[in-house]
Image (cartoon, one colour):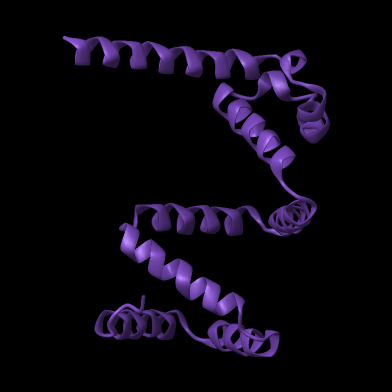
Length: 159
């Protein structure tokens, strides 16, 4: 009986939180000054945005306020790069990210390790690898990915 009442309270609390988020984000005037400053580009269109997008944007503004200057600089550079992408390129990035989210946790961890390894390479080495990748045909890329997967499966994970 106690378990059911705890579940009921948790359920009601979560509904209140979700409802509060939606109400909170529904009116531009309900945003605090910092959020308005960060989201200023959306002021004119705020009321026409769906609630889910408003809530996501408020979340972005809240995360932005918690960032240190270095993190903000990094995020600004990424946003600037994002804005230069075509609609097709943006969709490709979204699709790859969606595929990544569907991976098992162990595979996500492997991808993150490989990405960190790439990030830590000297710039000249990264440029060389990028150029080599861009020159490959789709078939060559597919085969390279398959070879990499087989190699990773054979190598025991380092701790």
